[in-house]
Amino acid sequence: MSEILNLKSYPPVFRQQYIGIQQNSGLDDTTKQIQEVVNDDTIPVLDLQCLDLGKLQEACEDWGLFRLVNHGIPLTLMSQLRDHSRNLFSLTFESKQELFTNPLSYFWGTTALTPTGAALSIGPQNINWVEGLNIPLSQLSLFQKDNETLGSFRYSFPAFSLSCFRGFYVNFRDLHSSFTVQVGIITLVKSAYALFTLISLFFLLMLTPYCCFLRFTRALLEEYGRHLERLATTMFGAMAKNLHLDPELSKTYISESTGFVRVYRYPQCSMENEAWGIKVHTDSSVLSILNQDQVGGLQVLKDDNWLQVEPIPDTLVFNLGDMMQAISDDKYKSVKHRVKVNKEKERFSICYFVFPAEGSVIQSSKYRPFTYSDFQAQVQQDVKTLGFKVGLERFKVAG
Ligand SMILES: [Fe+2]
Image 1: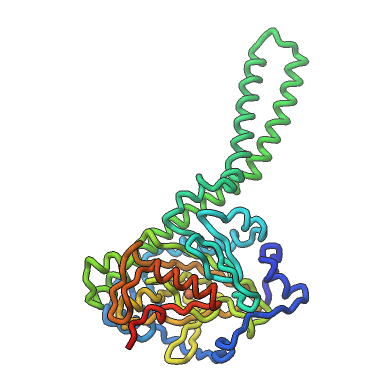
Image 2 (image 1 turned 135 degrees about the vertical axis):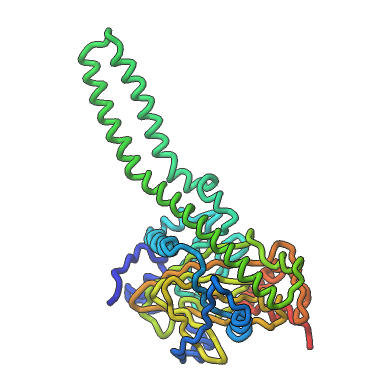
């Protein structure tokens, strides 16, 4: 059964299918060739409470992907975040554009963003059926105080009404305590006082919940971010141990300050067999950690077969990115994956990506030395000029 659509919350490009305009869905030749999906979910499951390093090694080498259970993130926090994301995305498209600005960024139709979070322009044939919110965790503190638009929405009206209310109350009290004031004047002042109280209450009731709503968003993300940093550091530490990496060098290969969260909404889409939520890609990160709802749609490539990554409650999905593949001298896989759209339901997922420290040079026998910034600049250039990411091949040592 289809969900009731909140079309005003959809970017205009996604509304067209509901008003009878069938546009180019963005299906390319690559995706046409790989429609078959095997429903054999044998994805490795690791338990953080008794981490099996051998099993981790196998998962990284054979899959580039695994599930993690007993990860220590409170279940209520995970579900609260998903519910809250649903609320954020239910705002109108225009509100999201206005509110989710620096340090946040709001994007749709593509997941290719510049380092500042702006979406790279794409042609209509390359549309991904997704909208998202990019949240650099190290800049969460700016989320409330330095964003002028958010600041004006949150504070000006309540602050204004409170200060007027207080000023009026003081005047009224002084008037009331003066025995020389006529009774008629007191009645007039009381009426004005009641009217102003009502107006103040209106602004407080209308705007304070919004203020709380955003503050709650930040509090949830801060708590969630602390857990993700813990998990990324722990799991990368175990991988570095398995790979016998130099401890000093490997410290720079992952940096909490680079972590960001992306919240994705995949609008329901009637062109289920044509459009993609996100087309085939590899992540550029060291590690990516996914918290998905129960709708499903993620698929991974394993031994030339596409497999569904069925959602399992309270389980995180880890996938390795391009940086991890280079760090491991290609022993570990940056797994290819894609997201299918759903014609009946929207899908929400919250993904964390973490990268090497600024200036950290990746030393690998398979690639020439490069920093993540070098890699990112190359990806940006390729997306602009070719329309797609070439990735690690650009840094491969010849022979
Ligand atoms: Fe991805």
